[in-house]
Length: 131
Image (cartoon, rainbow, N blue to C red):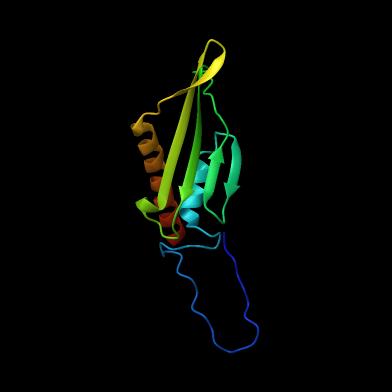
């Protein structure tokens, strides 16, 4: 996403933004992390996607191969820089027991794997923007 603004008056030209920079904030948070998060969660229904605040929340999703289990994910992008510590992923899991959804633990490796997928996608997006 690119946003161009023309200044009113003044002859000072601003240097063009460097697309290779790790800090891209035209949407309020790092756009590479934002786009990568949306791509990684594209198979899940979203209940919230706030690009200004950097928050994405999915609705419950049950894999068709495992209909007695469902997960919900939230992603927070905490900084305008493309850094691992600018990304926070949390997940909730429920299992169906006797017709009722019951909270169940989420393996830490699941959250870590999702973070890694998002970070890898974000880096790939940045590399492709550089050309």
